[in-house]
Image (tube, rainbow, N blue to C red; front, top):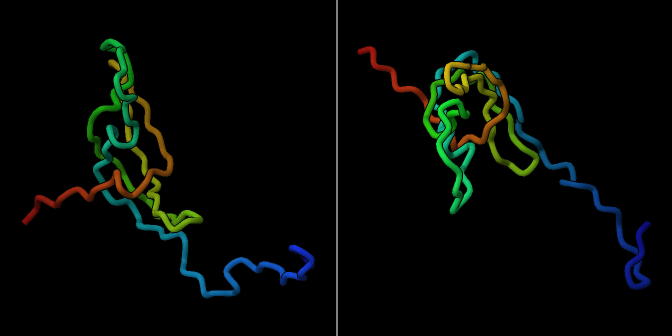
Length: 110
């Protein structure tokens, strides 16, 4: 038992057994747009200079969404794979990104 000001307090039991919703959803392979400018924001008042071989993270790229996962505080994150470029070099990365930087790719077929 825990005592606070000489008073015996009951133990804290998290969510008190509330029903929990599913936290992970597989979605196959869905095309999404990823706003890298929002995912990797620039520092305000930065005085850096342009470099042609630097990471290109100030654009929207197409990627593949394979799952959604809920954070412990109720925010959704998508597991995405996309390509980051730097000059002529490119690399595929896969990681969890906040849902608010993702948008579905519009189907242009009829």
